[in-house]
Image 1 (cartoon, rainbow, N blue to C red):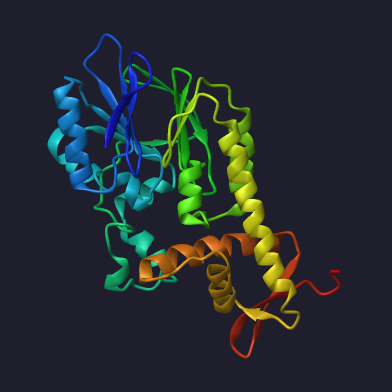
Image 2 (image 1 turned 30 degrees about the horizontal axis):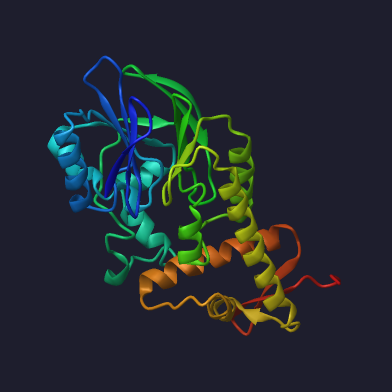
Length: 304
């Protein structure tokens, strides 16, 4: 974990999951943006802040994925930080079992899905945030709606620096995961278009490096999603009589060299691939049928 200073009062912890930090000028207040995967990650953050004599009094959690809030319970226990989170996302942060249950078709989740990568420890939310400009204890914060990776993810712009969370991924992360995790492709495209137009001095993704000129990385994300969408359409095209949803997930993973080794990876990739399928369905390019008690996907009748 590397602590990188961007300007006089703004930093980020560069790690597998980035954590932002803002020092309020002329006061003893400091804001963390996200909290890392677990207690160990947060201990490293707090150790470094203590070394640099930097305060931590506030926390904003951008969205309710465990790798972004897993260290928050420990932080609250140690410092009682004032914690903010987006509307809707905050419900999962208070009741994390909702996340693992959603990955298991709303059934009570099996133990294999109740792990720190999906279900973090519950935290208390002091303030629920919507898109807009807020003045909170001296912090001037512009929250920006960037859904698609999660239901209601918010990025935050502070002093013309954008902490973008997982609204886009650095190019190394794109290559690593092959099929990025999203819950809605249409919203993902809208958020990427929105990011291209945001006026700021640079951006920090949740996974990747700070860039002053980040637009080319946004373009790389857009192109990646288009490639994945094209490949899923190709698979459907070569199965004119239909293909089961589960087989489609399998063939997409095979095509993109994704190896599912456990229930967690299966749940994540199944959700991501279904997001592309959902956009095709909304655009009336495919139809979903129940054939022999199986959810079946095929090209819309009458489509060329």
